[in-house]
Length: 430
Image 1 (cartoon, rainbow, N blue to C red):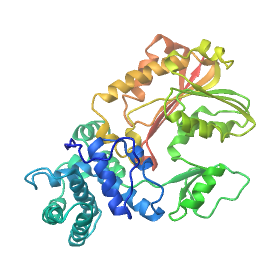
Image 2 (cartoon, helix red, strand yellow):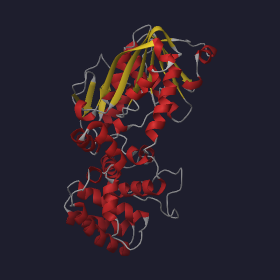
Image 3 (cartoon, rainbow, N blue to C red):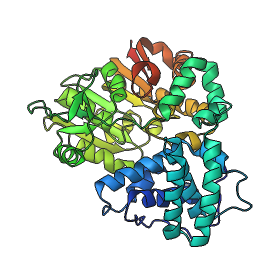
């Protein structure tokens, strides 16, 4: 899965992508840049110029996401078919065509279309290469994968880890889940207004699935604060925390602020402090906090939880201890790979243990801010026991754990719960 290429023809850094006239060609541009610069998928999409029509923009995202999801299988199908590496643009074009074949497109039609696109995006000579290579690639893609990792385009080490932890059937279901486009969910916030018909009810109270073809209305409602785009799994840690009116609550790793806003809507009155380190995500956190109920006192604090003890908050005239603290810790994101589709290609095997060490340090730091009798919820969007139960066991094996008791825990898995995976643990201070 080599992605290093010569950079001479690439889009210069920090310059927005200029999309082509339609979604297919734009997907090729996105794939080309992803291959060349290893940029995060969400950052690449934000770089798209807004001039692309909504339907073509959606098509570009669908094709590009498909390439990233199925990258290892597509790349394997291309291996050895060319005497030397083609230009990155040509490789990107072949990958987009390959995804269309995986998705069920007729090979002859897909190849014909790809050749036509190559004449515009590349050259006539390269179009001939695309014609020859795409036909052979289609034949390879028709063959089933030998292993689960090959069949579902996941790193072999990660699949092996899940097989040990969950067993064969749940692992297969998880892999299949990750490879499907995710529905778009919204949390309805405007209790006094009727819910629009294009928001389909779900089994999770307050959450709705957005039906296709209504993005303009959704954007207007989001800007007005009537709804917030959010996966139902995010509710789990907040439901464990049970934030109440008139309490003082700390969201200790708050950015980008979706859970902060959910806490705010539950409280309505009281004081909410949102803490996170300096960085680009603080702008999104500020934007979300600005949508909090006006009856609630809200503060945004840039800071590192591990060094932000009671004196730090006192210096800014904020509460030194809190009735409830949410620690939604940075993690491996293995529970949200359906949404964060490039995580599996960035995650390394040693990262999970490293995350667990950081999570335990953050948990110890958070305990200093919990009032006697107060509540602390530790949560992740990881499926890994090492980052969930393992961190909690290590905490209770420490001296600090003696001041708390574990009241309740939730471990959500996509194949059982129908939404992103998560772990959440409610700790009560004695």
